[in-house]
Image (cartoon, rainbow, N blue to C red; front, top):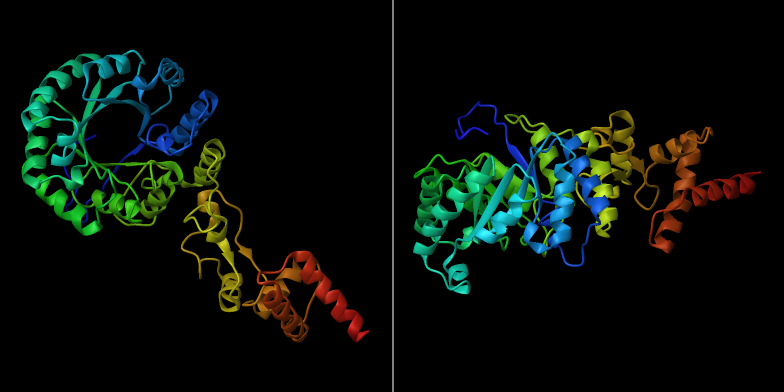
Length: 386
């Protein structure tokens, strides 16, 4: 990845996408991936075209190290990175796993330094000692600042300069408790770019619901890389969602990524099954409701042009065609289309008549109607007019 920033107007940016589902994603409370699930997720991530997979935290256990070795042996066309604390023991355990890269995490804010009972000078000393050792063991070394978005700017700038001097090849800015906003990300990127051209990564958390927006903003604010997770899986409210960022990049001018968006539904379904976290209906990009429509005005337009009330087609993320739901807000076009799919021709006049009953039933049941209920209403209406 080039160290050159790509913030000039008109320049095509090629963001580096790092997926952390297997590391930060599995840290979501109660989530445990089996070795088989981890290998399948890694394979699907590679097929989707992410540039780098943060494959795990080797110091957790011997079992964790074994599955990382197994994933490394798969020879996937993607950089694999092991995560380590600022500890020589962690780095050596990571080196035993066969990954190409290592990420070393340091405290960045005064709060985190106090929690670890460390001083700023300790960071400088450890950066030089640990990065130097890591460069002997790995092809690529990145370092990160935990709680960086709550750190003093001057302290963070010094951290960046120290990381660069130590030989780190990328600096991660972690929004550990998810307090960043797009505006603060832009200001932070500008402040860091004043002191160094070291490649930057933004690691977003979703505590304020802004993780994907912050990751997307970072790519236009001096950050070359962002870390994401599938479905946004991660600690507390989660991380920036890979599928959301992938579609935002695909629909925005000025970005060129390797991501194949048609694989997103399969990938998200696999992670949801492995994590036990059901994809909510209203989940952007891959949720069921993302391609469901009930409003009569919307359905009538969608039947003419499926992009009229959808930002992209379901097939672009690997889902089936959009679904028209028949209920309180439906119009005649949706009713006619419903029966046409069943090989039954219904006039506009009959559809209007059926709608009165459909809406009354929907009001009473407090939901949309099922296909068989709609069919039954027409049968009853036909008997009434017989």
